[in-house]
Image (cartoon, rainbow, N blue to C red; front, side):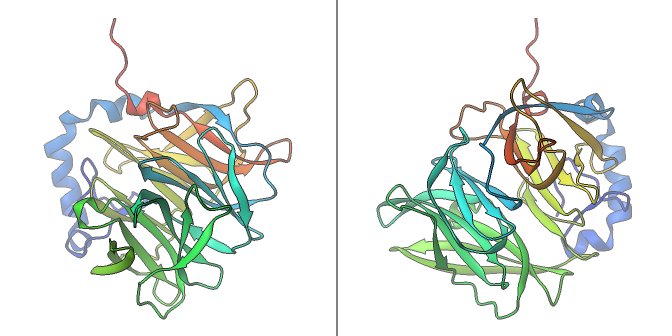
Length: 323
């Protein structure tokens, strides 16, 4: 297993988590470079640096942000979990949806909008501060985010998680790792039947390093040592975004050979966080007025306010218009 357009090389902070690929990552990387070096003009074009514009933002938030997540499916919802406790939902115009809830989370993963028992529901899997896997629900009929139990049989404390598209197999694919074993990812699919959630386990996947974050990209699972990471996938574009230890935003699009810093250009009234704490991204969105997808980062601005800022990645995800 290998991410489309990615090399498996030791220098990359991202490592494909399939066991066979881990054992052979050096040879696989060299072989893939020889075969695909001529097929990556897009990677070469942005290897020298990337600048993306900040185009919108939430109002000043109540405090530091622990994690953010976006939903896909029939709509687009932004979930924001706070360091000091609290969960809020926003639309992609930066307006809060409903009232805040007092749940204490250490991680929340990208969600899925669907219909369950005839109701429009957006489900975000998350991890509580106590290490339990839970689901967080947005629905137009709810006044505030609701917490539900997930049918995942895990007794150990969970450290983190990521989610991906399940296709026809279910609602959403989930990967997580535990406090006791950060060198292994557990994957499965959340399903729904007659209004009841189910869990279909898939694999126990070893990692060659302690996992700090993970992503599903191009149908593949990737473990990362970065503090946070997100896929930016659209058509033939398959890129990974990450926050390094210095809270700098980075992108890798050249098969993992290099990681390039992303600078964010402030808008007229929009200031990007100087030290981002959380990240999410989608190359395509069903709503929200972002034709090239969106990157969201949370953090504190130079003025001391905490915000989530919407960044336009169109220069990466969309082909330039030819004269």
